Image (cartoon, rainbow, N blue to C red; front, side, top):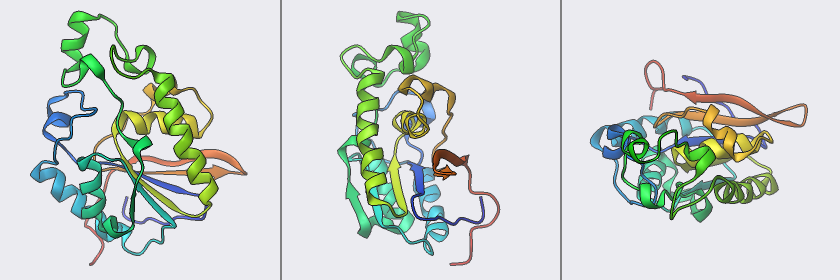
Length: 202
């Protein structure tokens, strides 16, 4: 993505930059770990794309990997902490890879099964529904900084699907997504867009 524009009612969704656990594939819910050096660099590359955009509201998860991404992207002064944007609580599966979880629970899928001692898909869905209601009440252009699984549920709920349908939306770190509308119906304008080509001139 080299050009970016937002209209009123559209939402720019940004997954935080790379962390050590996103690299290793460990489930990172409540663990408050920092960005890697690569994650920092990728977050800084977002700033020129966002500098000319007007946001009526900038929301971030409570966790430092999202907050730091927001700050490095140039929106730290506008940032409002939104607890409902925190990542899925993985409970007993916190810090484990999918392979480690499947060794114990073959066929496990977080979007269907949730996590023992953590959250169910329905509970995450209730959280993102509150975020969506807040965004729609705001009415202007909004930026959200959060995490992979919670944002996948948010995308599903934005277009009226169940939380479990989040499994169909793959989302990489430091990518841009725009939630929009088509003839007053919620729609995805773009999804999981990487930063392509040279950054805009600063």
